[in-house]
Length: 412
Ligand code: MN
Ligand code: MN
Image (cartoon, rainbow, N blue to C red):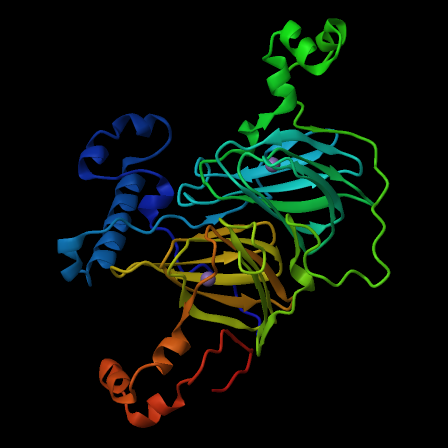
């Protein structure tokens, strides 16, 4: 079921011009004509924008009393953005600075070359949750109770470091390691972390020499400023166990999400992990959703948390509903991020021949959802008939249990 990914939420002429066009601004627009814009074309644009606005406002007589701002943009092209690029790898981030709607989650797409080190650092205000897409990576982390851990992660594994726990990451190869970092605060910036080289650079050499056991001369030769990601030597791998290590989690910080049995539905599969199965992850729940071509993740919402999505592969169209007659639709593909506010209704419609894999996270200890089919099934038939003005035979066709992910040809 290939669909033409035509945008159904085309911006008005007014929005795409990036101007607040009013009659007054038109009168003041004479200097623009010198820059090549004719008054006639500007007037045409104004008329179009006004017509589009009139059209939008027409059915909203009742809404006049509770006027709501338009829904914010909920799409960000993370992997197409520019970020950090160095000899050891790259990092691209999305915070409220680039993506204002994402107040509760910030994300980073990071690639480390074999041996490259994301240097020793901690985060003062945010916990870190990560999912490995490709390659292998080692982490070291220290907790305040003195417990240290060193773990290797491969594709499908996640980690969680509570805020303030110092850690480092290292690519193990072979090839590049690509992972997505998620932080439980949209204002958090990966480019403003507490990095060890930055701190050392800011500390008087005598104090640092005394504390570190290094000579003042050695201290003077340390990096000036933050190293962030630096090339390094590939360490020996921890040997995997003979039985393939089927246990989901081998350490408090690690959970093997793709080793987990998911919920199977006609249109795909969903693997969810929250603090019930991964106790340390008290502030972030996550999921991997796999959609077959033509699948529909049904209309639903999350009563307890915002939703942050990263598209790993394939494409999908997402529709959100924000009450007050407001809705928006966007198409997503690899490397792009969606943000859906807590309680906003939404659906995901797969399109394209390639299956779609989505990394989904929620800033919450527990995963919660309300799905349309479950809701409607848990109401009396007559109430449903009268609510929609339809007959009993129609209501009898509606699903009686959750379908979650409809298949391309699911007949209820
Ligand atoms: Mn970190
Ligand atoms: Mn959702």
